Amino acid sequence: MYAIVEIAGHQFKVEKDQKVFVNRLTTEEGKKVDFDNVLLIGDGDNITLGAPAIDGALVSAKVLKHLKGDKVIVFKKKRRKGYRVKNGHRQSLSEIVIEGITASGAKKAAPKKEAKKVEAKADTPKPVAKKAAPKKATGKADDLKKIEGAGPKAAEALVNAGIDTFAKVAKTDAAKLSEILTEASSRLAHIVTDTWPKQAQLAADGKWDELKELQDRLDGGIEK
Image (cartoon, rainbow, N blue to C red; front, side, top):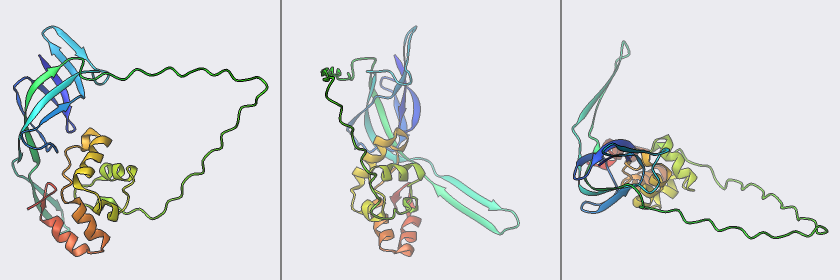
């Protein structure tokens, strides 16, 4: 039996006991983790396709270790401008081993309760619900994309969760920030948020030079 499952924003074809390198997960080493975004399951000649995911399907795995991938050199140059920039990057990865593939029964949606029908009296007019006035913004939002590793999608996820300023990011635990990103989209689950509160505090205090020095020391969101 094999399955095609989405893990940390990428799709993998996996089988039982197979080891896979994926983008860094928040799960600790030695802990188990489940992935429910299973797109396809194959068992011999029987193939089950999801639309897009298969209800009840689950791929269970165990995190073996966290590591970094090979260094990739990124070189940018502009002709006749004297512009040359050379950077190195090592992707933060997690090595996992697939422990099992469940085709169905992993989760069941709770049955919806039928609403009780209330007969309205013909003589009694229905009350008109008043529309609530839109809430006014209490303050100006900050550009969270200035935090190393926080792209437009990640910044949008934080704003939607009510964290729209550097001060609020600084007061939020890194694990909570990672949880918010994961709930917003599985494509954001691999982002490392360990230094985000520290970066946000420097930005909130207006210490841009210190923030630049810190970001120069970061590698994949982790301080060297």
